[in-house]
Image (cartoon, rainbow, N blue to C red; front, side):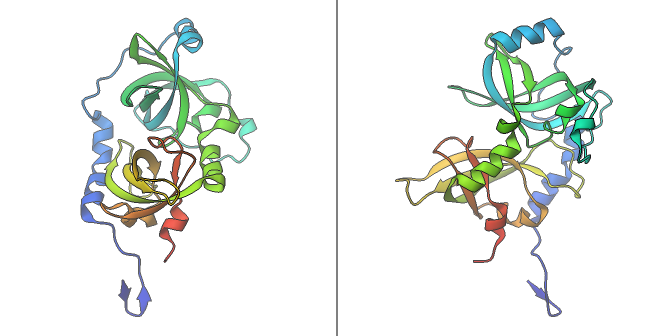
Length: 246
């Protein structure tokens, strides 16, 4: 769009903005009919679950402290000085993926050490252990540094194969969205790669840069990197390449 001799960014479609504007209300009162779980697991139950629970991954959709406010993301460039003691109890809304099962969403109440809070924000992927007899009994934990979500994303972008994605659906998740930070969206995509015989569909949850919101409307096209054909576990969007003019 050109206005008065200068180029301005096209505005995202109103429908997506309206849904984003409603996130603050939905995050305060719960989402998708999920009920508040009971007390957090005690230390003994947590250790037992870490030893014997089914291993999986959890995508953080939203996080709230016991006081009802999202914990602040640290901007301290020297994390070695972070307080290692457990912080106040927190409630996470997560999307759990176990091998051989469809993903599902649940709430987890858990105390988290201050250094780990930086890695457990909306859009991050952490490890988890799940009670095989009760899939709502979950313990979350941050994987080793080399396995952490942001490191994986950088590795996929650097070493992954390339594909073209078509946006099939865009859904805001229940994170507090104020219009200043990048919203966290669930993206349903159809991928096509030159070295794969047929397209496949994936679902990912990721923070979307504000200037890229117009790219995630229905039918939009994104450049993505991936390691293998899966349901989205090894897929990440290359926002820079997607936003670059052809």
